[in-house]
Amino acid sequence: MKPLTDSQPKPLLQLHQENILERLIKQISENFVNFDLYVNTSYLALEIAGFITQLPLELRPRLIWEEIPSGSAVTVIRFASSIESSAILVIHGDLVLSNFGMQELAKFFSDESSSIVVAHRRKRSQARSILQTSGSIVDSIMEIKGEQAPLLGEDSVLVNSGIYYLRTEDLRQLKLPAIGTDVSPFLINELILRGLLQYREWKWPRISVDSHEAYLAGVTLSTEDPISWPE
Amino acid sequence: MDADGVLWPDQGAGTILKSPEISDAAIELISKFRQRHKGKVAIITNQTAAARGLISLSDLKEFLHEFFHNINSLVSISVVCACLHHPTASELSLRTDCMCRKPKPGGILEVFRLLSGNPRDSFLVGDRISDILASNESGIPNSFLLFSEKMFTQNVTQNESSFAHARSTIFLPVSTLVEVEIEIAKIVRSSQ
Image 1 (cartoon, helix red, strand yellow):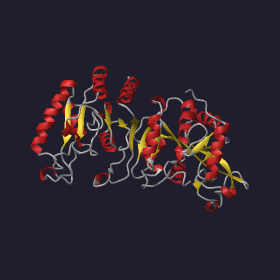
Image 2: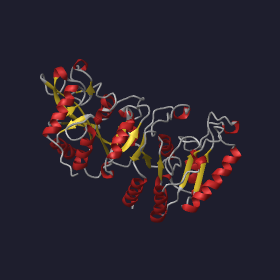
Image 3: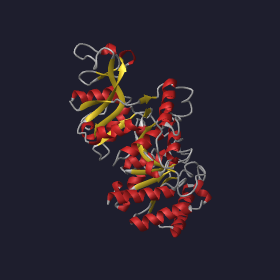
Image 4: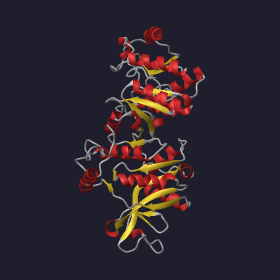
């Protein structure tokens, strides 16, 4: 994503009317109830803090700042031990979702009694972070063997969408992993091993801004599907 | 509350020796906090002027005593906890890797001991990430960090061996003390 991300973190990349982070914050605020919002940051944290400080107080998330990035699994498990909420919704800060998609996401989780990983279809040739029949995640098709065949057959497989609904009760059963360990695949696979995780298929537009092409697609999605937010 | 950068603008090491004026916003926040929430206010500050050789230790102690006595005539403060140490102080009697220098939590914990306070019912306002680290470490759930270009400039893990592992520091970034007041009122309301 360089040079776009040399001086600004990816969540602050501008879309149609707002940046990626602002779109997520407003969509979450519009569709979820009774929640506290946190943004985990390390790289270019001053820029993130500066942007957040400009948001009205009712939308402003708290910051989880790490001078040395802990890894998302470490952050989430540690965070779960410090809060009273029954669940944590984790969304990657580079995701651009449609408004309807976020509405559906809120419905997914409104009555959930188990931890969930959200998954979407992707062509086998482009697939990374793949869900196996067991629900556990591997990084590439090559790692899938025997009965652990990928879901959905020859043409497409289900891959991790970077959206997780994790019950704090489940997270508290896990030991803190080594610094630098991420949610996928470590935390997902640990929960699967304990029978604590299910997956839900995501069928709505979702763009992970991990390339220039994806960024342009994100701008297009936000232009065609702008958020309506009172000034 | 931290002092330099919160009660008055931070002008670098030895700011307090310039006898800065406490801001109207700080007076208002403290007054409202005491009146509306029946809270107590403590100042927890690193003051390294003597450690850096800018003033003698005895003069600094005398100065701080008189300075905060004058502040107390404007607004009521229950405790002032000033750490005068520094790990590389030129004044040998102050050269120590103490527990009261933020980001370590000793100063804050001492305030809770003196006031018989509970961290869970407390708030902290700072202008540096070291304030927030100390706050989190003390068990204060709600910390406010005044946004400034300097908020992350302190390398908090450097020379802080016990802090040299990755940790998460949680706070709400704010642009003014008025926002702190609004947010405290909201948190108090929701906990009742």
